[in-house]
Length: 615
Image 1 (cartoon, one colour):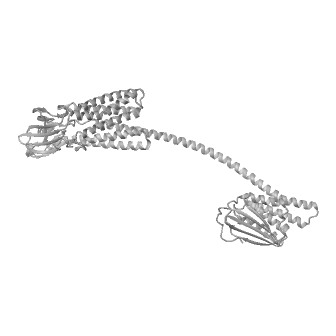
Image 2 (cartoon, one colour):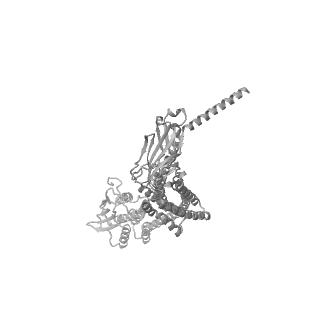
Image 3 (cartoon, rainbow, N blue to C red):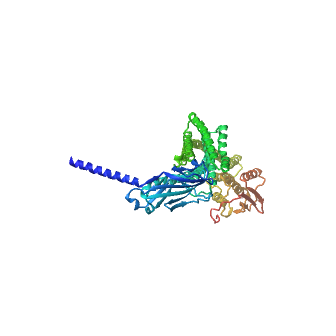
């Protein structure tokens, strides 16, 4: 038991030691609330008076400009460390231009006390360190101010003590009054840029107003951390008032984009209130008072209260996620703005409090980003559904086209087979059939010699063989056609005592040389050679072919009796075949013999298969 009692005694001793240390630290830090105030307002000196800080200049002197000197007396803080470590002074809010003096020693000055056009605005908390040797048993801290009407001039309670003890409060104030507004301004600016890009792509009016509103709010929040204003006061303050009016209208336009077209009376009431901001500026300059500003704020909050009530009722009747989140953001911003107006213009005790609206207005940016994300997800879902539907339709159409193509291919194959059969039958009728009929007549007449009948049958066989060769000829290859003709007919010509003179160049492909066209050309040449064999009594047959300018020319010459020009049926048949392929057929008598020229027109000749002439 004795050991346990000893442990309790040690624990109580440590707790007492820690408590004593904290109490000692608190004794070393002073928060000064009482001050002697000497002020002049509009050039008139005011009676000296004792006040309790904070000093809220706009509340005490109704927004008029002036000068002030505050004296704060305090005794040396208790504690042995007071004389041996650096001390600090912390003021949460101090404005506008100022000088801080301790026991006759100037510690810090900012802005000009005499120049009313000076741009210094004192937005940051004041933190300064000084050596502890400046402290005396009885100390006098004097703070001189230039107070600009309507610019939140004044002085919050002053904290004095060792720097290590005062620093945490200063750091918290710096984060709340400087770092956080900077982050808020950057966020609003990024949202403005993003919404601007969306508007550029989609031309949605919601994104246009969102971009304008967030950009205007970024300017408003950035002012909370600007120590040196871009314009002198009150020009800069009045400019900010116009910016706030434009932002308020953009907020209303955003709500209108989400909730739909607003009633005409409500629309014009809100527009009138925001459009009266320039008039408010003129009245403030003319009267030198902030009362017109307070009237404008009152009209603004009345208009917004009416709008919020109508939006709330509409949300209850026709709720949607976009409407709910927008009405919540608008209510939060309006209430925060109302609290800030009370703190800045009416309530002395809230002088050193930071504005709430600059933080809660970020809810509008968050609401806009949420709306954008929901619309993007909805558009993506619709796009996926549309893509799936299109894929199904394309697949269905592909199946239909495939089936249709198969039907057409089958019909085309059937048509090609029928056409080929018709061509073969026609060729057999015109060629083989004709020769067979001639042979039958020769045999039936009994007057034809056996050699004539054999010759007719040979012609029939040649026609049949050439018809078979025509089926395998490459399209447009006139060289192959002539080579096939020579292979089939040269033995007959030589056995008949007719010498063949062959002079054929390497010809290019004939663009018009489809199967039927090649077959027509083959029959033209066969008719000419058959005439030479049967009727011309020639000893030489010359065949030449060359490619000219845009045409292929095939020429056959013999030294016989000439073609039987009286055979009109044969000539008409040959001319018909030539016209069918667009060729020009010329038959010219010679002494001796006949020249037959077949010209195959070809505007664009394909390259020859090789450069050597056909032997």
